[in-house]
Length: 312
Image 1: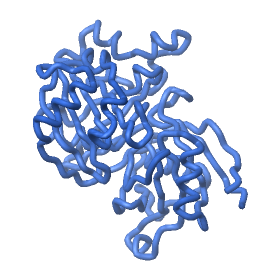
Image 2: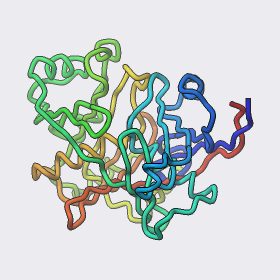
Image 3: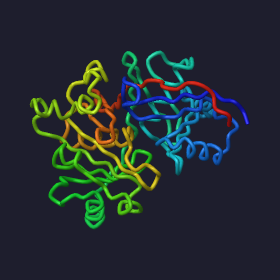
Image 4: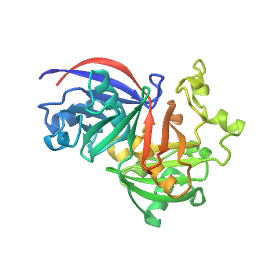
């Protein structure tokens, strides 16, 4: 067993412990799949990543590093908060990208581009495949979430590496009031994300409601999580008991596919801020922007909370 540099990073927040924690083993060389999975299960974080040199083929295409992403139960081909957090850790450890304006990550999904805006990183949402789920499945998932049929506006299967079921609900309050039955949800879908939007995001009562961290953490400045934290206009929650994640604090892969879906269908604007983690004491913020070429970028802040060594 070998001592290896390790970081634990909080992603989608500037305030430590209000985002989604990620474990990053800075050098995964020589570890087997089973050893990586065992460590990810031990950390019991929603994801743990292992950084490696890029494969020769990916390096020839500009990849700066390779990442493998594990939940407590399985490996993922791609995930959003591990992409941002791993890149943050790689840069902090002295990683030097080949290109001045972009970082290129290799993962099982393929190559993912990242860009920097000050200290904030954003990844290019991978290509999305989506389709309509069967009505019978939606009804079973709705029952497990405690939803009435009329509260679901529309639904899609969303695949950008992992495959998730996405539900657009009738309001942010409906999203926040869900009390899912994990036992009933298990086995139905790999993971289900729910989102709600309100029609008047500038309304004073919505501003109060969206800045939930002001209530949950009264001693903190509600505006301190991000310098440009305009009131979130989308509230998100994500449940995946089948991979050992009852409720994920902030889910980058789902927010990426959700944004591609909602923007393409004219439901959401090309630029918005999503909140996630409210119901479990977090205050995650996801910054969505579609550029002039149609590429959706998913941005978020990261902060290192633990730095040291692990023996693996």
